Amino acid sequence: MSSRITPRSKDYAQWYQDVIAEAELAEVAGVVKGCMVIRPHGFAIWEAIQQDLDRRFKATGHQNAYFPLLIPMSFIEKEAEHVEGFAPELAVVTHAGGKELEESYVIRPTSETIIGHFFAKWIDSWRDLPLLINQWCNVVRWELRTRLFLRTSEFLWQEGHTAHATHAEALEEQRRMLDIYRDSCHELMAMPVIRGTKSANERFAGAVDTQTIEAMMQDGKALQSGTSHDLGQNFGKAFNVMFQNKDGEREYVWQTSWGASTRLVGAVIMSHSDDDGLVLPPRLAPIHVAIVPIYRKDDERSAVLEAAGKVAEELRADGLSVRVDDREGMNPGAKYYDWERKGVPLRLELGPRDLESQSVMSKLRIAEVNEKGRPVKEALPLEGIGARVGQILDGFQQFLFDRALARQVENTRTLDTWDDFTACFEDGDSGFVWAHWDGTTETELAIKEATKATLRCVALPGDGPDPEPGACIKTGKPSAQRVLFAKAY
RNA sequence: CGGGGUGUGGCUCAGCUUGGUAGAGCGCUGCGUUCGGGUCGCAGAGGUCGGAGGUUCAAAUCCUCUCACCCCGACCA
Image 1 (cartoon, rainbow, N blue to C red):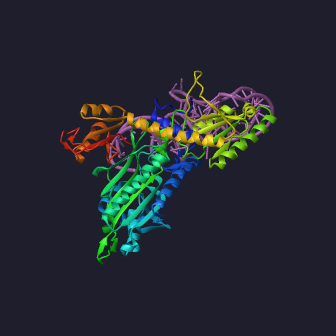
Image 2: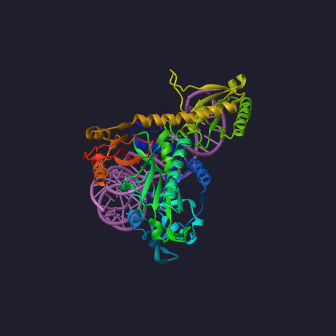
Image 3: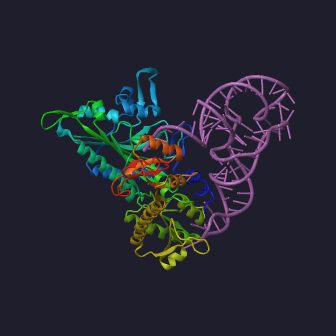
């Protein structure tokens, strides 16, 4: 048990901060309000997410491009709901080159407007559609309360922007990208999510429809981990993005946009980590295996290090990232703690005894504890070590997903009375609750006011209970189906 | 913006009430020792006490002003 990390049971928020600090993932910039520094280990996790998403985007025909960081204020103002939604969090550049600018620039909070402007230039004909663009970049949304990875004034993300000839095609795209987020969360991050549609109140400013993936953190709160929007023709009309169809008529394009951010790093941290520090699913981990050599004398040292090097080479040949920890002046025990709090999934201990038996001691990041309170380790034969380690890591990946899913299921309730509902959200408690809702923003806000729980989404078919009519949990008015409520980050 | 709090070596903080040459733990450097779950010892480096002004023989400490950051509430991927 680590003494440096506040246990989850004592203070969940502090635990989260401690895990990040101890794993050297990021820190509060301090000198720049609301911003963070992503340290190499944290950035490596983001890079793995980027790589996975980027591969999936390209496999579905999208291309990367880049648009300016600064957006003319007038652009933001062109779409009425868009400007209304983003106005409170805009950072504005008013001076440059020592002079006041004639027109202020907004530091992009998102790029629908400036991309709309260029789409209008690029699109003339139905032959130009669909136009499938993605941008990896930073954005700034001025935040009052910030938390590392989860909410900072500047963050990194990707924003996809597409234009289509028909609404049906746009809807298909919106859904395709939502599913890509879901797949990446499940397969890469071992993080189960629920897909759904946002209420009008939670909808992206300027969108016709917003879909979301919601993940449950260990404290039962929901974290919106990706969004995909049907923009309808709203931005098409605002920026005059038109094309000539096969019949020779001019029409506004149908657009989508979709995004996922460095918040995903926070989601992964809160999904899997424990009181000993960071826990990472193997497919996401920057380092898969840490090898700790054990020795007393110089001749032991050279023999052990040589053997460790051979094991590392064999594992690397299988595509694994391996670190041989040959730091001097540090006890093996200290190294164990070090790699564990950094989230390395598997550790191999290699000493003189192992050399003699031609094996290596392995310890999974999450292991059973024996009667002495020590973690259970397994001796692996050096012969065929690569295949065995591969199996172990695959198993750990699956274990983490299963565990997270079990926790989600366990903390999800289907409720029908207001008393049961409020009881779920008393004090700091949360969980997922499927409940009937009358469909009005008024009721949604009243529920939030009373319980701090927010309407996360109306689940897509298969991601929630089957639709059945009922009575709103708050007002008793008719409801078509249950929707998901939870406190949220 | 409303309420509360804090600024002192890299980090966490003590010292302030009752002014008198700036401290601890951790971390860092060097040497030795140890090494199968956070070794131990010795030596050492490192601070205009957030900033400005004032009171005083003397200010981290008292007074005034100022800046910054943090925590709690209203907006948010």
